[in-house]
Length: 128
Image (cartoon, rainbow, N blue to C red):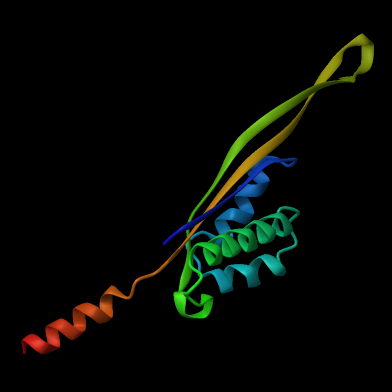
């Protein structure tokens, strides 16, 4: 069963957040937490906190299952554009340069991998 966590209006550009999100896409949860712990990018602590939130959401939905036995992985991570604050900065000769302060929305989905390979091999061994 999957669990979802969302983080809205993060005050950094989506491009910078996607760099960190691409590091952990498709990885196991424990491996992703290790990567985020030691990644120097500014978005890494925010994604680490979001991943821990998704983990607790999964644990709340599956109270009888253990996290260690679940074989959790990051099924989907999506970084979308958020609001853009537009400001003007004074420039020479009476002009103004536009400053765009970007934000982003992050959606994280974790799921447990089912060991389909072991089921197929056991049925093929019985057929022989």
